[in-house]
Image (cartoon, rainbow, N blue to C red):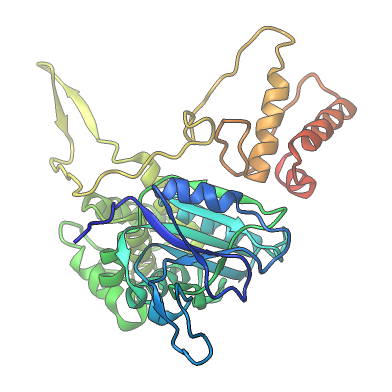
Length: 397
């Protein structure tokens, strides 16, 4: 028996939608697999695709296809170590932006499709798995993650094409003009999503809510405005101290939001509360005590069973959100031009050369340039970087 390298990605590559006998390929790891797909650009939609690797053998219809081969059929689908998502539409462009934020926690590659526009985005995502899955597991895994996304973003916020959960289904590669994002996080834990997928309709979350209240004083009466944020913030911290994943924390806090509060907060504010606590990263309430020791005011120490989440950076994998930074240099060293370039890259969600830049909006206070000079510079930067003018105009002020 031969054992396949666990980091290796085996896959098929077809040339067009009618290609039912694709070539069999391997990539040494998911990062290499991502680079291959990113650079496998088609001139028009419906051409090059990837899917799971396919076993060698006879076609299901030998009278029509008498030769043996790697046929793109369900009966030939082999195990794969990636899962794909096809997002056919969003209720608003902001949902797509927030969705990319969700996938930042994983090793993932997201790219827009041929029919995508700024106001009506459409996209595909390919994400690494921590182990191989067969065809049946892949379908269940796709539906489980879809269920979580529907719960987090709203049942009708994202239009899913569930066909890509099938191992043999073509996943079309980028086309000319595609915008893509590459995230380096962790691989999807298959067992977690198959065994602990969120099932709010069945009452699973309410049961989980009760199970995770141990050690937390839940309110015995409806929480009134003025105490809502602090109550949910404290509960989110309690859940994080137990080692729950961010998606679990958000789901449980959303249930608490409905059950505990006299007037529920909207989903966006609940998400912001959870994110704010995550950024605090378990800041300890420590005070200096005489004799050179420190005392914990709460008296309780919670050690998570899982590693803390990877830090988020907004620039060059060095600058974290919420920090004050100063850019210094001699006069004429192009400090303003650099900040303008960062703002354009941030608006379009692209890198600045080899430097990572987070996607977002910018407010620039320019003390020396007049309006004409400002627009001249931004025009040159946008042309040089092939930036989307509409995104820059809407996200840079």
